[in-house]
Amino acid sequence: ELQALEAELGALAAPSLRANLFAKDFQKHIVAAEALTAWISGRQDEGVGEACVACLDLLLRWAVVRLAEGNTKTLVGVTGMLKALFDLLAEEGYRLSEAEVKVYMPGLVEKSGQPTPQMKAECRDLIRRVSSLYPATKVVSFIQEGLNSKNNRTRVLCAEEISYLVDREGPRVYSGGWQELRNSQNCCCACMLQQRAVSTSLTCLDSCRYPAQQSGWCTAVGTQRAWRDACCVTLYDPVCRLMLFHVGTRGCRPQV
Image 1: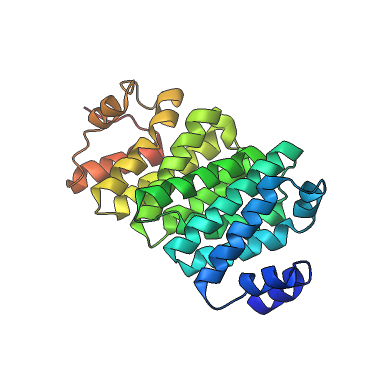
Image 2: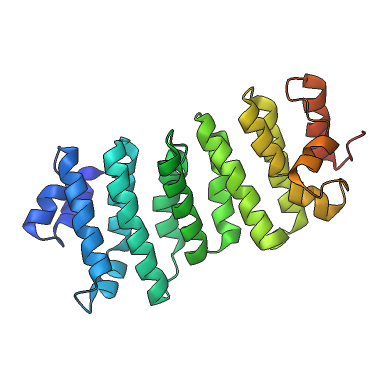
């Protein structure tokens, strides 16, 4: 993959940039990311927007490769480059294609469970930028895959982002309407049942609050605290977990 990418992207880059893009030293990758950020942000060339669109899939593939390597300093540089790139695409009125999102989103979602608050916020910001360049109804399916991650922090962030999109877009975030939204709720509830970490359980539960409120499955959910209280959230109690699962899968109201 990396060799093929070097052949394609390297042919479009200046020799010095190509050397940094595909060097073995991560410090060179940072230099390359900063150079790309400056080029994209500077708009010194009138053809920057057109050039970025022309090689967008290659830039995204390179970014995903570097994100996967997990070096924190590289992550900072690459996320900065991606933010500048998405800002440019928004200014150009460009809409991401399905192929481009498939290249980018799975890797970003998996890496979103960063241990540091700063990097977690950067990943969250990038995920939300995608939803402004690609239909939220399709973005949510990529985020939902993160609920199956082995990384607990990734699962938490993905559940939070599902909740954010549903709060922002309402049921239309799911093309299938309430039924599909309910299916997402089921996934969140199932995720919660499988986890012992309280943070994961609470976040998955919170992502169910909006659909439960709007569909009438539960009425006493005016606030996050009220929703948790209404569901009798004793997260260490397997009976309560089972009850919550039935709330999600069968549309029952919690008996309180």
